[in-house]
View 1: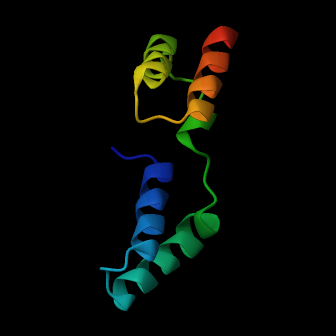
View 2 (view 1 turned 180 degrees about the horizontal axis):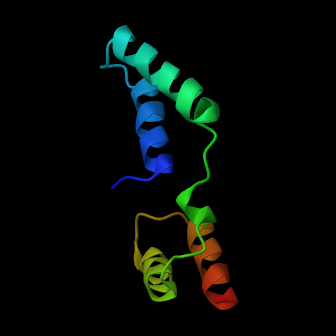
Length: 83
């Protein structure tokens, strides 16, 4: 089941998609305004129930991914050191 952040993210993506109709964008605006305080919902990173092993694995993968910026790799390294 998708989280509120995922649902709101989908509507936000719809608003910036040039291939969706104005009617669809209007629906997304209404959903964001009425159900998600304009799209202001806690992100998954605010969730303290994450599995630390999975988080560490994702950070390690970031360090080895050649498509990731040096800044992102440095941030991942710092987060790993804090764990």
